[in-house]
Length: 138
Image (cartoon, rainbow, N blue to C red; front, side, top):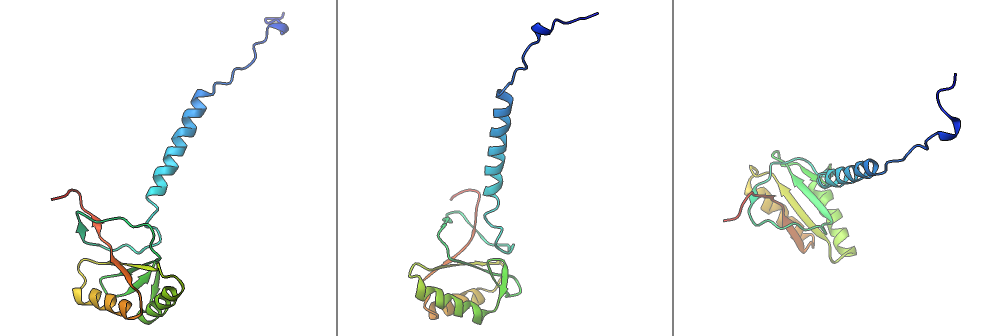
């Protein structure tokens, strides 16, 4: 006993709309997740907040000063002498060389100023201080 006719077999339909929805969801997910990966190559530090902090994307060196006074270049520990030597070498190669210092907000002001002064003494002309963006403006 045959229930179906062989010639009346329906072709399977490919519904593409749900697949497009899933692809857009994955695209948005990866775009949003990469936005949070910007600070992966830095050491976590409690920086002060500033309402009018600017974001600069063309930074050559990101130097972090932790509470204990230790220096970190990107995500690697570095001595002050090595940092100054490398910064002076980079400044000679690239006149647009920039250093941004991320310092803990509880760190002594004199330590931060001392590092900035030594960087200027090594010939680095473009030095900036990093801050977390505050919620609102005055």
